[in-house]
Length: 366
Ligand SMILES: C[S@@+](CC[C@H](N)C(=O)[O-])C[C@H]1O[C@@H](n2cnc3c(N)ncnc32)[C@H](O)[C@@H]1O
Image (tube, rainbow, N blue to C red):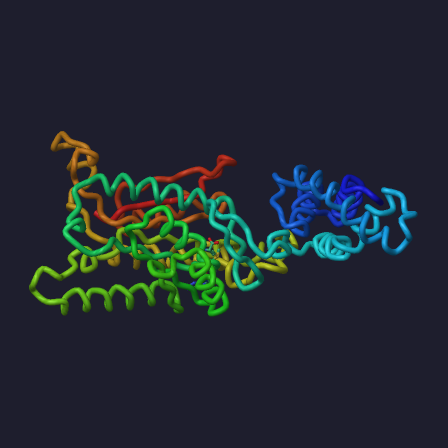
């Protein structure tokens, strides 16, 4: 096997035999990984690599053989000595169904490069839909009259932050926000903190450990106290005292009995604490949705029906209360939307992912 093309063909075969769903794609990503480039840059890099290989090969092989080696032998020598060992080791690990993202060590989430490893769930494309939905709504809300504009940064929380994906993307797209990411896993929080540091977002994103909403309640309590003790001289921060503008979560939502039958990449390499959502997968929504309501900023108190009776829409200037948005598993949206209704949220909406699955449920405090 002398050429990159032959390497890719052989690697694709090995990955296909291992049951990897997209073998050629993975073979290319891993080759890019050992060559230090993105998959999209691979063909360019391979052309350049071959030119370099010839130059280096001329020197190295020429020295050893007295200049007798053919061009093909020279290329083979350099490929084998420089890259092969690492590449074939990665291909074997991938064929044994280690996640591609773990083998690469980092992965893209909404344009942000996040370190990923066994400590936390690998962020999924569906979760980008959750962040996009929330960012869109926050931009709409920012266009409304807001008491928070009087002072203090708007606040948001990401419950069950894992790698920090949601909290960090919110901080990136909504630079005026201060955000708390929480998790019950100390390992996940270590990874999330490292990601925040790497992205230069640790000034605006904090992390705290604890069960579900407990760290959020403590964080809000501390900020409210600080806002009140700041004194009467115009330095008080009414925005901070008012509660969260957004509480976002992608909680574990796989029914317990289904966890073992997930793809090996997920069942064996994502932390179980990130997956198991109880008997029907809805345990976390039942605990989170009703309790989150009290932590959200209040709106103007008008229900959509009242606003309609008064002859104006919310876009006309009424202030929406804080939002709670969650990612849900396939088929869970109706039951989760019902939990929002029972808890007293309004303006409840459901957003589909790119496969047409109802993926995000969002509601507002009145
Ligand atoms: C599905 S993962 C989501 C990770 C990340 N937010 C993402 O979207 O990529 C769920 C996360 O919730 C955390 N978690 C599980 N139980 C929790 C609890 N009781 N309180 C807080 N976080 C919890 C897990 O450790 C895991 O990081």
